[in-house]
Image (cartoon, rainbow, N blue to C red; front, top):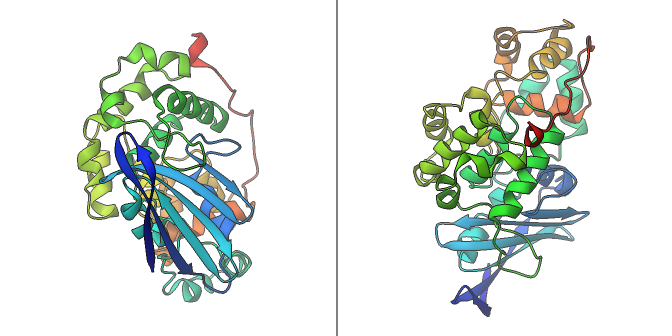
Length: 315
């Protein structure tokens, strides 16, 4: 059920407020489900506390923000801004409530560890933000660097391009792809982003409108990997969040093949091919299995030094 009213003015246009109430599954995990939509510690585009979540984005109908709050057995979704109708309509997907576990419980029983993790983290769902370019920014910035480096670059980039989002949460909108596409490389260097990743960002920004119109995860993946500098790993990171694709596997990841090989076969090291072979029995939910392993803290034994934290801004 929607209730729509007028909140005030935003960028010269009437700003809507739309409220929708969503029923939760009995074991739904609010915080664990929504955490993946934000950069850890601090994200200028969103906030997450126990039982409350804020996000914002650029919708086809204009900028909007969304507030999700747990109230008894429901999630109350409140959207603000010119794009409030679009954001409210997608609120259940953003909250992960459209995630269909289907036959996963039966598949999970084929391996004792996965069965245990599926039970322990049974309340987790895959959210589907519907925001492709916003997630692409994060994925490209995370290529071949540590999480600390990538998140630092992301925050700097959002603040540089950021515009205030509608609503009372004082969020910044994700960068406008047209503005990103028109920006020269040297602007990104102080963010700690070298030319290779910057070029991938600029190419993605140039075709962002087509990416946002993709009908499903498969089409988005095909379009993404056709962009130079964007491979299967980056595409999987994007579609897993933008479309809630529970089968998307980050092929090319530094750690995940080893984690899967160790967890499912007791092998200390694994290749991408071996990872996909071991995940085949969970087809349709391969990404979900990888997520459960991460949530369970499952890691292969480590050998050798850690990747150093660098700053390209100083090069």
